[in-house]
Length: 181
Image 1: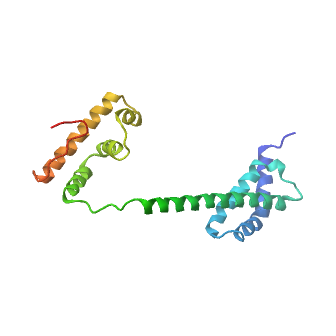
Image 2: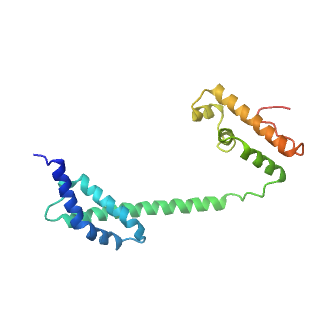
């Protein structure tokens, strides 16, 4: 016969109350960063809640230590992966050529870009920075190709007008891709 939910809850509360502090000490002694301890102890007791029927009544603490040991191992593997990814990213960033100071003309473009609406900036960024074509843009925006093309065309025109206004004829606007003067 299965245990009723209130009985199960009481059993877990007793397990938690009796063994939280020893499990916390076990975890803290094995960590470099104490700040992670609360999360790992919570994860240990989450496993205990899910597997409450597997917890031996007379050996609950050693069983919890075993769970905490596996939780710590998973945590360490995750840390190793994160450090590896951080090292790779650091190496990639070092290999990336430094961005030079913006030219006078680029400053006008940047200022005009900041004046655009969020929607226009997103459209232009998806095309210029992410390299999306009209079909991909349409998928990203959740609209038809035609609608995406029209929105992109209008955003480019608004950017051009803002650049023209801010430069007062000092910079020649660059035609959009696929357009001819």
